[in-house]
Length: 152
Length: 302
Image 1 (cartoon, each protein chain N blue to C red):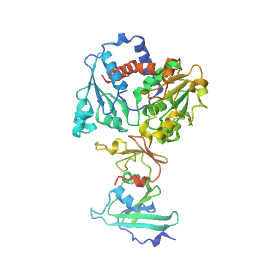
Image 2 (cartoon, rainbow over the protein chains, first blue to last red; image 1 turned 45 degrees about the horizontal axis):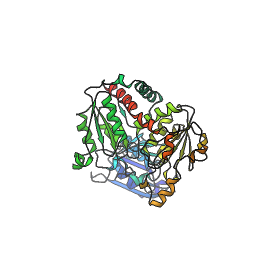
Image 3 (cartoon, each protein chain N blue to C red; image 1 turned 90 degrees about the horizontal axis):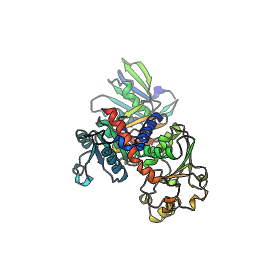
Image 4 (cartoon, helix red, strand yellow; image 1 turned 90 degrees about the vertical axis):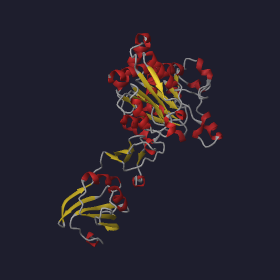
């Protein structure tokens, strides 16, 4: 099935995040802090057919170009995501998401004895491993369901 | 070294520097009296402690300095809801170095981000207790040497912070590490991950019997009652990890038995009189080792 059958129209300018792991689109928006409150047009397609992935999600944000640094955090929940920067209906840049060395303030630590799960003025920090993430405070490793630990 | 938070990443040379200096102090402790007159150690203890607190206080006093503490948590500003980050930043202005014990894992890592004076983690929940490891290594080195060593570490390996710190530190040396515990108290995933990454020679066992004859050192830790749902299960499990004369029938003649103390009944009192027992000597070395550590850290900072 070709990707032209998507139920979402092309955008004039902005960012298209394609090949999101099916079911993660809303988490992607949450991770990017995009909730529509800034007035930007946001389109979300979930569980659409994909040649490469079977099913995938797609997110389009109009009139906003997201930086690679902002987007790399998505690699935790959507490692196959591709980023298309659109200007004048043309894709001017196409990138994949890279795993950042560290993510801050994005995940909650599942260890309830961790210092980050207190009233202390401390933001969670996770080292990104090959196959998971690891709390820099208590050392707890999360390998599965990283999206289930998002701090939103 | 400005902060001692964890033994992870502590190099062999950094460890040996402390141990060598501790040996020199231990040989002639009086020669090191009085060097730190006017130096104050801030003791932030959010959990009970006897040995760690007293040996740090003794160490700084023997060096000529003094220690202040915040008293019991119930009568301090903690009871008013002050955060650890705030307390540490306030005390930083009073003292020359801070020794911290806290029930939360990662507490010392966090405090280290807020203060610039030397900081020693004296136990963070089920995390780490690196100064204990230095005195453990000191005792191991004196009794068995630190290379070509086979050590058994037994008891509560899951929550035992002395175990976690020791295991990480031992990866610097040519050591076979045997971990002996009930299935429910085996080493946590993250520690096993690190040992594997460090290329350590590690084996896990549920029984001491098979491995005992091959050991140079047996490091025993306490299995705590509160780790089990009920008294019966606790008794059944804990009983399998106790040491008495009968247990030691198959032990090598020169086996060194260690324990971070306090013990409850993991090591029968009858062992105390044997050549195997090194746990009181181990505890006594807490003073020269902590003197050496403080000297190196305070000196670096000056």
